[in-house]
Length: 76
Image 1 (cartoon, rainbow, N blue to C red):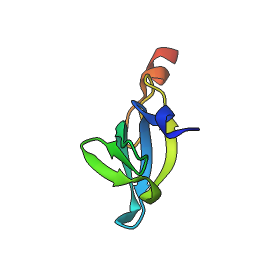
Image 2 (cartoon, helix red, strand yellow):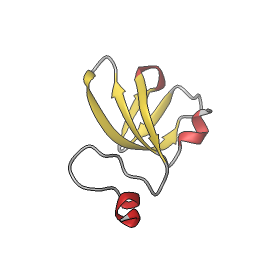
Image 3 (tube, rainbow, N blue to C red):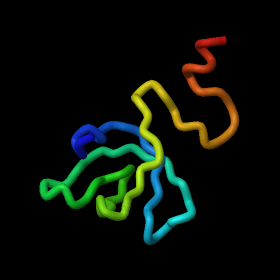
């Protein structure tokens, strides 16, 4: 998968050297022209520091808390 494919996708990620134990949720909004940095939510991160755990499509939401996702509600 290319970096450009991550734009406008929700991800679960680790920001390795800073928060290597905290799983965070975010949306990739931009990638730098040199492809060294990516903008997740409102913050810029080095691509080499980000460990992506899971990718989501536009209609899916990450399950970090309680409740059902949109797809699970429609299935019921």
